[in-house]
Image (cartoon, helix red, strand yellow):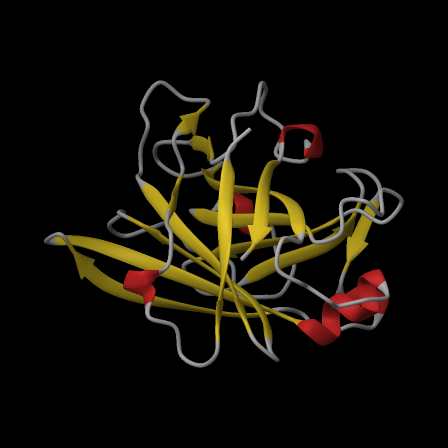
Length: 203
């Protein structure tokens, strides 16, 4: 099981000081496109996950909340913020290169519903296009506010040593080269598999 340290940042983060996770377990022959990310806690605001992908002209057809963005080129974070509360589950955020995102909450693929259906605000997402290592990159960002977690879990306290469970993904069901990759290794093509989630620890 992979382990990732979740750093705390007081203000605007110094990304160079934050640990990086990589999408290394692909269910396709080619481990492409390359994707990496960071996950951290902004004090008084909430969690942010940032992922970037070395990909030119990513497929991005969808624009609206909860559109099927997984069929586009997509980066995703599935996080259970309180895994000891098994009856509640994990929050998923999936983002395409238009910053359109899909976000739902529950214990599995068929036992969840959209955050918006709960009358709660959709996580804020954004995307920017960059050049890294001389190559085109698109970088997605999602902010998971403490108020949203309070509504979902009934608490939003994250002391040092707090453990969470998560997996991060890169996929593209209908891209020219369909692909499915994960941070924590999965055994079959099903991202809604919390039994394979890795561990996140708040520092």
